[in-house]
Image (cartoon, rainbow over all chains, first blue to last red; front, side, top):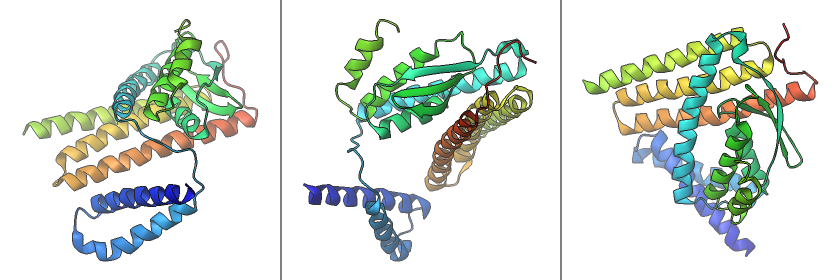
Length: 174
Length: 101
């Protein structure tokens, strides 16, 4: 089992680094003379990194996450720009907490980073199961948006059961 | 021709977001609100500038490289923002609230 995990990680990282090399060298195959040893070395180094919980990207989940995220990033930029030029009353900042349903460190880190690029929210810390947030406007429904992204990330990383759990817990409030 | 128009529009939009981010950095009252402005507006601005450059690039590889740069900047920007906010929070810097000078 452990051997299989190791092989899978080696294959995945070699393919990823290979693709990266291919793009960076603009598809020039002559560079693979140096590239191949470098790719293998990088993959080997990657294996020294402790394996976390298995990440299995869901295709539909990826497309959905990427498109909603891109859209909300655009809204976030427009929103903060508007407030930057507006009067001081355009902001009503404060601190909020959000109880996370996502179970593992990798998906929680992704959520924490994503939240900082969404409209009006910024992660300041992770305290146990809680996300500590700084919000630009307390009047906006920021917790609903974080819950929506938690559900999107659960779909993206194929965390079974989490999506249902989020809807069960926060469905009424959304 | 239409590519030039499109990339020109993207470039101007990107620069507008950079200006807005800088205005926010100057005008917002505390470290947290300033981080909001920089992280969101500048990331989006860089996204539009990257798009403009990608549209003008001579090959698909250059376009991919530029978008790769943006993806890395996106991840680095969000991470740096979280680290600064966490440090400020743990140092006991209280967020500015409405009604304060």
